Length: 150
Image 1 (cartoon, rainbow, N blue to C red):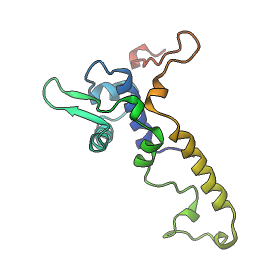
Image 2: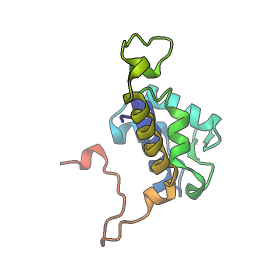
Image 3: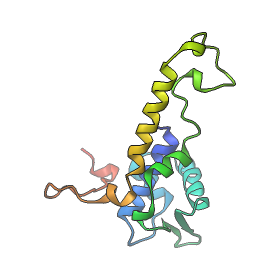
Image 4: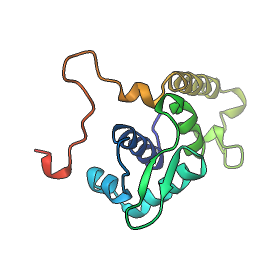
């Protein structure tokens, strides 16, 4: 299963906001860190604002921050909100399915079960758990600025 770029950017944004809870973060901060399009991130942040996960503060010293506690942000729910569909193969799309195997094919059922298992794992994950330090000493999430990367 592969997440869309939109979902990837959504998750990266949430993780960055979770690590930087002590300050307002700008879209430019996140765009620079990940070397991604600011315009694309604006769409991500707008949707996160509509969903009530992120609070945006307008003005000269504005930015964004988490509106909910990381423990209350379920990754499975975020992925469901940001993915447009979970079509694993053509046969999942009733409108455009031209596969002649569909009437007798068991692959669709297997792929549907795999997708449900995938989402069931993500349903057990919160933003807080993604930000928790790894048990190994010193393994804490640290975002390297592009200038720090070797």
